[in-house]
Image (cartoon, rainbow, N blue to C red; front, top):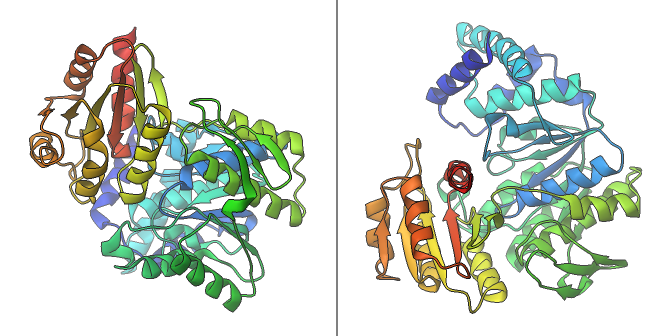
Length: 429
């Protein structure tokens, strides 16, 4: 099987949908020798901040000298981003070889009248096989959606479970209240381990604490009072967390202080479990962390930033950051969303801040909302809105409107930001 054939096979498994539950994944992994049982995990769930927190933790562990697996979704630039070891993408050869193994197991399951694994289940199995092959010391594992019934939750050897901010998202799958959603995400907690959480709203905190008590798991939650001396400066933020003085996160955005503090608390928990992580590795890892698509500066003069804000809490944080860093700057926005997201609230909070809004349709995505439909919806909040025919057109228009001291912000679905960043870089050449 070639890499292209492997990708075609995985894309074809999309016909099996997205099925919540662990039976199929467990059976698939059993046939593949249960590679996940030979690995150790930091398992991350949450609504906003999962990816950034994962990036901080895995970079710190790499700086501490460990071989660290990363499993993430969605990806921005390359399919192979989702499976990394020490921040290097899985090789195309490995994708092809492992996909062939998983395909054979899936076909055998189908022949026996069992469900065929979904695309996410296939990718999760490939990741576990690869991390075992690479002899990873620790895998930082991001839930695809939810927790309890997410395919990643087949793991039994979690060292620390981590909870980024939990809010309203994927309501059709996870529940209709924040308590229901928190209950599903709490499903990753394993008995006798340590669970670390961002500061949560009280009803979420109560759910996490109850689950930990039932599983004899220690619960540690960030207290806002432990985050001090915060200096909010664009691309030069610093803060103190407990006795860790003047930490500098590598990611920009006011919310990254909270994500960095969560990563620090997770590292403290790992230390308590016997992992050797020096203060130097902690500091350097935080500063060296890179995570594309999260308030990322892509170009300057004018300043061009991209951010994957696509739900309520992310929109609130992005609005806070824009008002904090750039209260006086004239702003041009590019927006693209998926039709099944709660995009109206996002537009209501963000688009009034813009001098002009340009809408786009996210390419190659059946769930994408048409640019002209999004423009019509945005008119309720900002009448200076127009739709673009393509990402290239949107970037051209935004730059034509922007002066050298203005800023352009592209936000919405992560699914189009990679293509947009590539377009910006092409035009910058």
